Image (cartoon, rainbow, N blue to C red):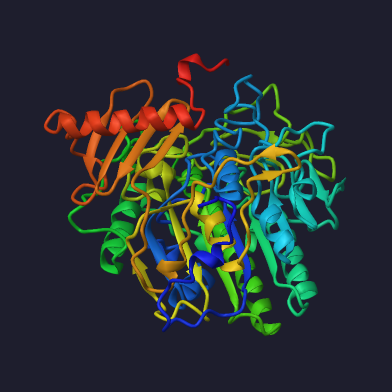
Length: 533
């Protein structure tokens, strides 16, 4: 059977009792560097009433995965391919290998390029981060299927003065003295929905917030909500979140909380408690503000009368980020401004003498809090243990998802987002575009899960980033932290990856290692120590 087919057609054999709705609007909302346990409906204490309400009317996935890093995740989400197949096996540098060009491949198509020929209006707000920042616009959103774009091409930047801010194809400055990027993205998304909600054509909106990626920038009114909330530190916070996650069914009580990262001191021994608390207060405020914006987006869907027939998906691009920004940076990357918009010096880097949050600071929240964000799992962004790749995923589609507040433990991966969008839109995934052969789709639609069914999932799911590698097959996961050896875990009994079975079950380890090697060969993955630096 040809790979060129309509996904709606593949659903023809579905149970006749299911009445398919009209083609829905689709809104995909992506958070940036959000930990698995940060939001309320996944066990967090951060105030996210709008995401929590979305979960009460929709479905939450407890075992959904990303690719452990910002731009590979975006490439995978947009194309339905593994990141190396889309040309972005690492970051935005061209390393001279097909899987590591740092630029979205012409052998891949975006969701917008698939949905637009099917009659969808294609809209985007937020972080692009799948092409280098240079004079070429060949891979900017409008050149990859989007009709409207407001956001940033680069992968990080000040929330008060974001670098590479762009409308459509034109670089622009921030508007207004009170500019805050999260709010600006929300306002643009609400405007786009208002402009397109009642047109004859359905719309696809990709809303890619940069919250809560560093720098720690938040409004004082939001930070004030969390004053003193973190005075007991990361140890207490991890225990508190873990208990809520067990009680709500997000994690199994037989999976113990991982030990605190050995490089992080016990909270009682932390010398800079006031500064550390402030870091987490600002981070929480960033998430809070994003949730407020999501509330405005959902309200606009209600106000315009399209809520019932709109599929909304929320997820994150990787686990919590343990990156520390060096104090007193001498060479500033592109994303760090030298001065604020009104001319004051920006103090770049983590400095316990300077409290984060304002426009003249540029800090991150660090390993101790990232460890809490990823409760109860191991490791962080960059790594492919569960802490680096596990994302909350909430889907709401009132016309289809009838059992609100439900949980599913069916595994899924970012590659499934393209397949899902094409399926519900009745769109065709092409074999070729503009003379370029298109790599066959890797993802599988999540629609059966939305309908309350058991879908035929992936026999295996694969990962590689910076030499960190993994494969999941059902209950089994083989994983390695570069340049270390393979570890084997039974995720059904040990999803927190504490009991390595690679020696006790060497046959399974060897089987999965061989599958990973075969996947790596076909997916353009190279040994990390052989990739040009």
